[in-house]
Image 1 (cartoon, rainbow, N blue to C red):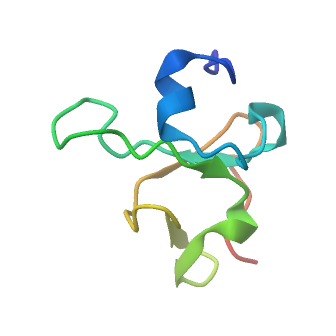
Image 2 (cartoon, one colour):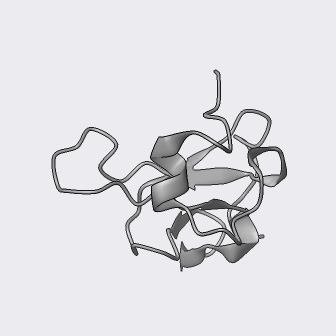
Length: 82
C-alpha cells in the first residue's frame, strides 16, 4: 500500500499543519474519500488520539466524529484503546 506524500495537494488542503507525518501515524480517516458527501476529512494520527466508542474494540475520528478510521500497514492488530 502506497501512502500519499505529506506534500500532496489533496492532503495539504485537508490536514492541519500540526498533523504528524505519515511515518508517525498509526491510522487515518477515510470519510468521504469517494467524494460522495463533500470534502474528505483527511485526519491522520495515532490510535491514542482517537475517540473511544467501545474500549479496546473500535474508535472514532477526533476530527469528524465518524467511525471511519483505517489502520496503516503495521498497525492493523493494535487495539485502538488498550
